Length: 271
Image 1: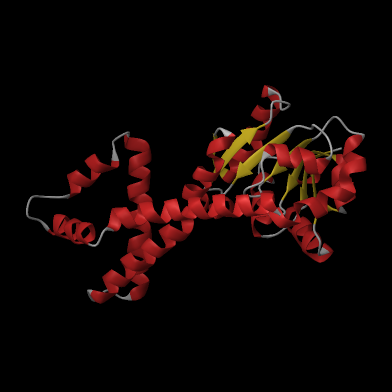
Image 2 (image 1 turned 30 degrees about the horizontal axis):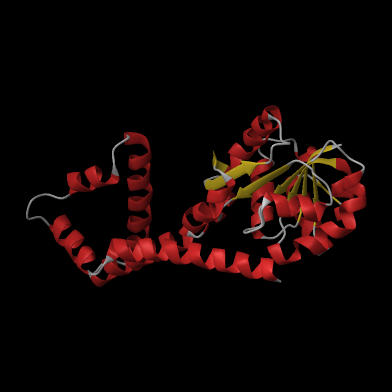
């Protein structure tokens, strides 16, 4: 019996496999993918094993499904007979918009399900992983799950009805941050800085500022005020951003991502 099985070795699936391999013996990980060579290559890199979807379904305790929402039913349908005979596994889905109830229906039984919403920085162990579990998942199993997921970054439990909202922030958020970093660096270049230095300065400033928010316990507004001297250059920059609707634009971006997620969820249910 393997501790971890992963069906789907795409970008997110592979990132999670690499992070989990730091807390779980790689020999306890079994990988599968539609393109076998991809699973084989990742397994070789990690020191893990690779096999078929059926082997993962039959032999793994935690079965991670790195499968797109539209492909989930197709992947799970051939595995129903295998899963029906087992009562010692937990499905872990990272498919946006698919509820725990829908996962149980596709699996063909009232099985334990953990639903996660990770973001791309899990690939370096700095991700944000939103998590909710069905009532069939015991407290012991959830604690164990969180232990090996800690290698992926910060794991936080969220009620399932808030998962889509959380994903609009942390799941989509890296794209917003990359745009901000690029804009900060471009601003530095426009002031005469070499691009490579401007990019480093922007990245490190973001890392430092975010870390200070997390560790100081102070509200971001208070920390902002500490940087803004009366009549100084920082408040002039803040004023320019406010005049251009910076905060409103960011809020609108998160809300637009959330609205689009709900729209796609409703469309899939109608189909």
